[in-house]
Length: 242
Ligand SMILES: [Fe+2]
Ligand SMILES: [Fe+2]
Image 1 (tube, protein in one colour):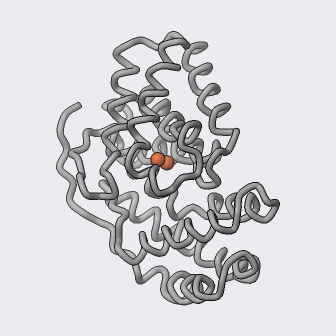
Image 2 (image 1 turned 90 degrees about the horizontal axis):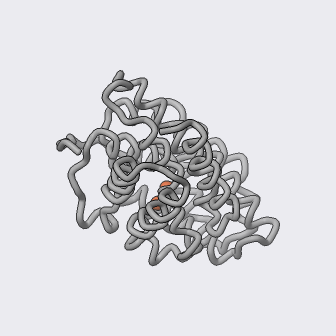
């Protein structure tokens, strides 16, 4: 792919996400997913096997569905990937990305769609890396920090904040997040969890101001008190070729 086309395709996705239709799925989120996907590719030593342009663009375009579905957390698990892939296909074609790469990008994005884990699908290399990078972001401190400040300045409601906190607690409680690569879990346990736990502890008063006491209690007991022990996240993946 020509560098100018690739750069435009990256910029366009970041521009779409910068509108922040959804407090947890903004441009910072997709840029972090891209960064971690590239880091994982290196850690796995698969730089040569991976189509990194397609992987990077899939990371940046994977949540563009938010332009349409906004912050409706209850519908996003069911159509997020499908809508994002459709938007990516249409826009990337306009930007001059070749058909084969567009096809792969759409595949990477939609393979991640499991309908709340009810219909898990077999991954191929790029989709498995993207999926792990995206899942890692569920534990990102930067993401919560941005979210909290969006709510504090009134950009999103307290109701949306409470809904997402409950969603996060559910995810921890049910061990919904699954990773394909053991390296990812190590990153999470070494970097993500201690930082996020410390962040919640330090900012508990700010969080409490925006939520009712039952949620405050849950946050205190489930996140601040026993967060690291509450997750077991590995499973043995089975890959197919793309
Ligand atoms: Fe998503
Ligand atoms: Fe995402």
